[in-house]
Structure formats: C-alpha cells, structure tokens
Image 1 (spheres, rainbow over the protein chains, first blue to last red):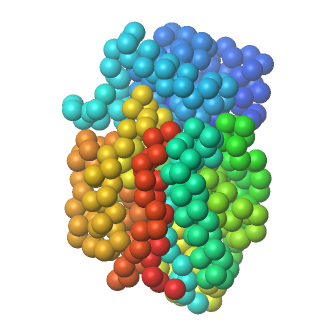
Image 2: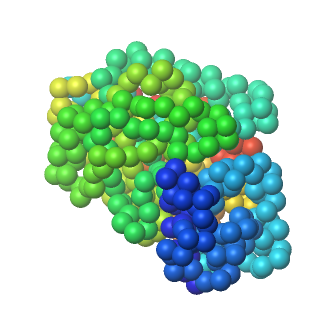
Image 3: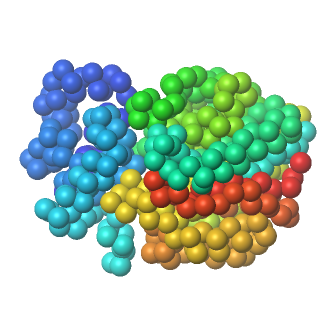
Length: 103
Length: 273
C-alpha cells in the first residue's frame, strides 16, 4: 500500500503540464520515480478509475484526473461504482475514515 | 480601511461544467443570486477580494500541507482543470502582493499561517470568480483552509482565522471584501455524488445566518462525515466567514439542492459594510 505515492503521481499530473508531457512521452520512466506496487503501476497505466478509487485516492484528485483523461462525468461515476463492485470497498484514505462511512 | 463586504457561496465544478443538466428553474435562480452578489460586491467598491477557499490539491499536498495559507503573488493562473470540462477559460487573475503581505503579517499576530508566492486556482476559486468578477479585474488575495486531507484545523481555529482576517482588513487602508466558498453537505467526486442532506444544510445555514458561534463550532468531524459527507468538511470556509463577520447577522439569498452540481447551492451575505 502506497496510497501516498499513487496520489502524488496524480496530483503532479493534474497540476503540472511538464509532468504530463513526460508521462505521455514515457509513462514507465515517469512512474519509476515513485515507490509503487505492481497493482498501482497497472492501475495508473490503465487509467483504471475504479481501482484507483478503491485504493483510496481522494475524489478531488481522481475527478481532476478523469477530466484530464477526457472521461465524461457519468462514465467517471460509473467507473467508481464498477470498481467497488469488482474490488470491494475502499481500502484506505479519507473514505475509509470511519467504520460507518456511507460507502 | 475596513471590511466592506462579506459573503459565502458554493463552488462546485458542475455549476459551470454541467449547467445544462440542472433543473433550469433552480439553476437560473442560483445564477441570479450569484449575479445579485456580484452587484452587491461591486457596490461595496472593494480594492481587493479575499477568497477563503477549500482548494482541491491544486497547490497543496500531503508532503507539506498547511492548515491555513494565504497567497502573496502578483498574479494567479487558473483553472488547473481541463478548460472544456470546467467551461472556464484559463486566465491570469491579478493579485495584490503588498496588500497580501500586510494582511498576512496582521493575521500572523493571532494565527500561524503559511504563505505562498505561487498559487494555481482550481474550480474552488475560479467558479466563484467566474460569476463574481467575470472580467477578472479585481485583485484577489487567496486564503486556503485545508478541508481535504486530514488532520484538519478544528472549527474554532477556522473561526479564529476569520476573526484575524477581519482585524487585518480593518487595519489596512484598502477597502476589503471577503467571500468564503465551500459546500455544506455533499459527497463530491465519489459514487455518492449528487447526494445532499438538505435538512442538515438548512440547520447549518440557520446557525450561519444567526451567526451563532457556539452552535457553528459544535460540529465534530466524525458527525459531519457521517451526516454531511467528506464535502461537509468545507463548512470551515463558512465558519471562517462567520468569524470575519462576528457580531453581524447573515442573510440567506439562495439555497437549493441541485444534485447534478453535487451540492446544495448557497449564496449568503453578512451585514458588515
């Protein structure tokens, strides 16, 4: 689990056009600069919004990333729901804060 | 000179980015309330607008997260988001670095504060500016309260931040307006997006317009998360405005849940001018 590192990748992609250019040119080289598990690398490489949500990425980071990917709003919401259906409840982060979290 | 205007409004990206999907009557009522706020802001003839925001990882991250931060830059660029998604063109917003510095120094008498000479605006500031200063011709001093990555400053410190901003505004020769922008109950950017606890919102807004400090500060984060979602943490920006307007009553100009905007859309002002 390196949610911090996953969120850091997305945070920097979201806000920095230069990081985006480096990612588009060579995604593996960029991701190699972060301490990520294989599952995290795959989720990031695939733009797997559902799995990234289940990993615990803050929606304010994830929503901006989905917009960057050009994903329509309804598809974004659908991808998160599908992620929960396939991978189970959110594992960490702000949406796992309390036991009786809404979802 | 003094604080000449104080108010709060919502900021969600859907307000501009998904406008055609909202109930037209509610949407147009909300836009009209924002337009009324723009006119009131202009009538107050401010030299600068302090925006108390709850930014969304445009500048601050968990490597170095300030509880409170104010901007001190010549200009600010925004939005960071995809322009077609947010439907707001990327632009430069003028700052007021010398004024920022004087305000920050005064606030620091009471509240430990970070400052930033570089700051990118996200929808949290750009959506309100789109309606309130559509020509981007009023100097902005951004102020941020961390509402996204816990641990978060407790509500009583947010109130103290607002009171300190009021003292700072009253201490400078410029005419200062202040607007807080946040959500009340909402579950933004999650599968529960669109869920809004209207009863909770209305109870909060009753406390806000009464400017009942004890009642406003009585929420725990656990209770807020349970009943108002993670987005409910953004009541911090409204509580700070209540602090800036301490002793003045507010007036609710608009409230309606608009699910496709993912928030109970709110416009309120306080009688400080």
